[in-house]
Length: 240
Length: 156
Image 1 (tube, each protein chain N blue to C red):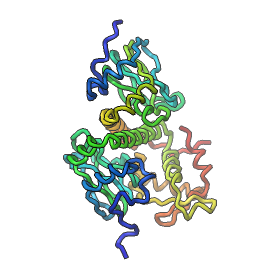
Image 2: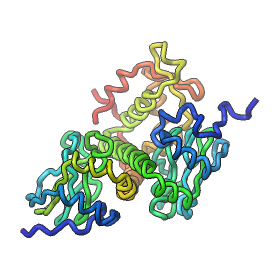
Image 3: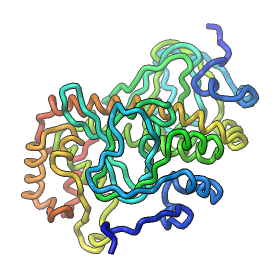
Image 4: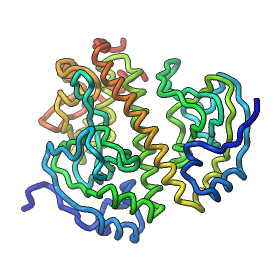
């Protein structure tokens, strides 16, 4: 019985998700070259893959599990910049620019990641032009997410609207088990503190808004599984 | 206004001379007035735009509200993301003053791109810089929204 609830995939050529993931959908030749330069590891929840301000060591391709990318303000406040999903690459901008990591990456659950040193990655990139295309597509995706977040955060009128937006975004990837019922089941690995860091408010406010959603019958929470009971009501909150 | 040659910009600077020449064959230069919308949010740009002189504002909008992201000047290349992913633009780009710009039709650019995949590496470097700028803006917004956002109201 493996210690984690997922199968470790060592060989990218045999990965069942390879075609569904932006960065991993490479030719056999490129994947073979990738296999030779990557180091596969499994990290427990809470592992810091790299730290803000640390010299770039390389990139991490997330195979299984999720991570958060966060930074700290001058006042010492933690700000979550982005949630990173399986198939995404961490540390890309720093590796390309040869600069320090701009944020800290921490795993939110047991995670398998492939690490590639900066030197090997740049050589891989120069030797396989198709990889450059994948990198550009990944960065395009990341830019789009950042602009959408900026729009959402800067133009949302209230905290309930911001939290509703977050829940609706998560509802785009519902749990299989919840697909048959009227409710939408989602898995939430963030604490209320982290949700607050993500929408830019306090934990107390998040707690109050979630309590309000529950009271209105829009949301049901059972551990890490949350059920959106009234998606329409949440959508009505979203004005931007 | 004289139209300077597109000798130096964030894309061409990373390309081989022969690729630069191929792209130059498809260029069209123009002067645009201050306040011109070079790219509208939600539109799919049909051309790559290079700012040769002058400055532009990049912003995201919703309805009549705008959040400025950055001001860019000479050498800025606009419209790369839409060309790569064939999606509509998430940002708006407006000239802040009279600008000299170069247009390269999207289909022509893609033809050159397909012949020289190494251009993607140059594009990745530009997108990397754009992403960093966006994440800084996001950091600012997340940092300040907690201070000003006390609104717990629900729409009527």
